[in-house]
Length: 322
Image (cartoon, rainbow, N blue to C red; front, side, top):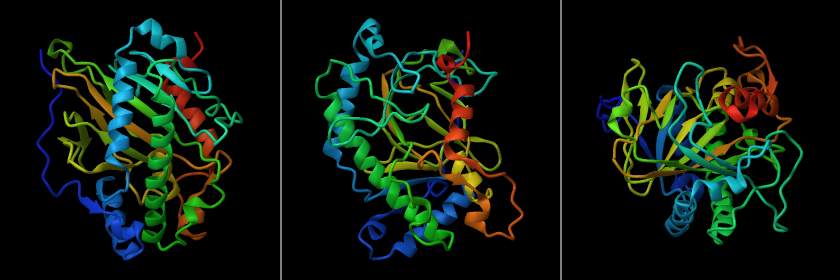
């Protein structure tokens, strides 16, 4: 018995891109060119100078671990709702029909206004389900969501510039984005579970853009252009960014939504913080808008909301009929 394996990564395969010049306006085009190139080739990047406070990251991680270490009965007090908010236990997610359920737990939340209220206007957006313990989880999670959302918005400006579009192209009318965040907990994975067990099975991300903060233990694996799995180890001070299926669709497959998976071989508990960035649900994902009316498009237009509902119903057991 053993774990699913991956090659050690070549240091240049997933580039590290300093987005400071994008954030401060000193060289947004240079950052955009680098992101454009990587998005067409590997679909993954590391970003440095991202502006997400290490103090906030540490506080959010500490609150997440305190929650996941509670007895399961306590966590199930905020069991995931029909609006995809709350605690999802081990076995609740399966990224493909023909694989075993993921060996992970998740806590999912979305944006709240200054009044503490959440929008409740879509099957994937409703009230957050905050646990009573730890008491600080709500404040830290809210702050983390807003900060990670800010990183994603900067990156979407770069994506637009890289495609020779107005820099607000992917941000127009997106004042109510469907973005959601997750604390993802991977318990130690014994090797006797064998090579078919994953923390997260091989998959591509559903939405537009993923902002990932992984811990120091590693476990993320990315499929290269030859179909081989390569390790994407943590690099201190960086976030991992990857193209999702909706952005690939929006760019007429110019950008690559890359399969990836997680195998926790560390023998320890592993924690990731994830923001899945998506626009408002009526946003039309239309390749012609991004690539021109004369483009030979590969995908029919679809709204962001309709696409995500379809993908969620395939992946999450709690959304399927008994």
